[in-house]
Image (cartoon, rainbow, N blue to C red; front, side, top):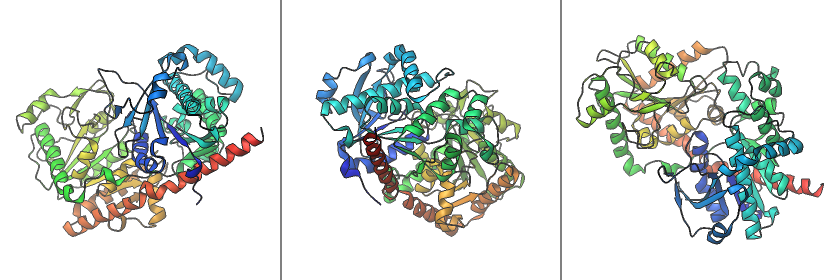
Length: 552
């Protein structure tokens, strides 16, 4: 496959999640960074929002005043836009430019009018985070133009990559103001597809009957959809992360994207000589937390299963995970199960009674031994409500104990005080019973850490596993892929139950085989393997730019 990197002087990648950990896109970019950095050195520049302050600094960014010093000191950006230049604290430590974009709001009406005139973007129905995303995106485009002008780089030697609808207006601004730059637009999940699912509508059975514009009007998503569609159509190369989302994008946005699957960087995983210690430390932390909350003394060989990810109750399959756990509990499994939900929600901070128990190494049952952190919306949180509704008692007699950790695991949550990657080695199994999952970083992360996982055919990752292993199971690839459709919910629940039970019953030999198979599958999904798809995207963007500029 053609490699056009030698034709690129600068590669810019813009995302709301650069140095700003919000969701799965952070995992995509932060793990991809090292492979790109090896190729482009400091000519790879990530651009993210400067949403930080002295009181609340980004833990992911280190300002380095010697980087791009002359540009940073002399740049005079309009609208009061300012920048900080430094390194993103991830493997590879690429250059990152954080953009303070507050001044852009003053000119938003004129900008929206211009986008309507040039690209028919409908901003009249904007609400929520639309203005914020567009303000950042426009400022990012100004930064890219400024760097190109300052360095006297030919726009023909530049590729600018924009991720998700939140950066789409930056792509359109750059196309209007510096059309010689080749652009790539990646939708990690279409805004209207996510909205269809979030509103409980069947996406897959009815996909061929949906019209994106019509559904946007019905669901009050006109502005985001209009912006995303304009970026998809005006990008020199339009991509998405999986075949399942490519089909969705083609139907709802009207343009077929290229597929650039997400890889992983294995240097996030503890070295082999440190893995056993990392696993012991993680299990100790989890079991101590569970004991301090429930008053139950969990044995060292307790089977620990977890789900994690964005707080999307139906889309991420959290509903199916909990229903499967209830069925497993009712079947009286021979081995005690500790099931965790690691999903950040509207947390009001750690429970002080639990903190005290953990500090004092006290094993005594607390009131409401289900949850580790306080919630601002305790009664309406869907995960909390469903766990209680399903009647998990979390007492000494319980075959399955379910604990909800509704906090970001950044190492400072106040209870576990470990990062998600520090906890992963302690698990025996993960379950991601996704309904709407364009790729599925969580199951890929899981197997990279040697933890077998359960995913579904509605996840891009699940589809990829079935491509490389037509009959996937724990022993041959560390992954089981549950068939899931719009109409087979309880059959899929039963299939999840069967998968969990098979790992519960596995002896040490079979368990170790599954863990090794998981790691072997993850080794096939490294960025070094998947970068060829990005090379093609860059080549196609450059070629499309050449044709576009020539024909203008």
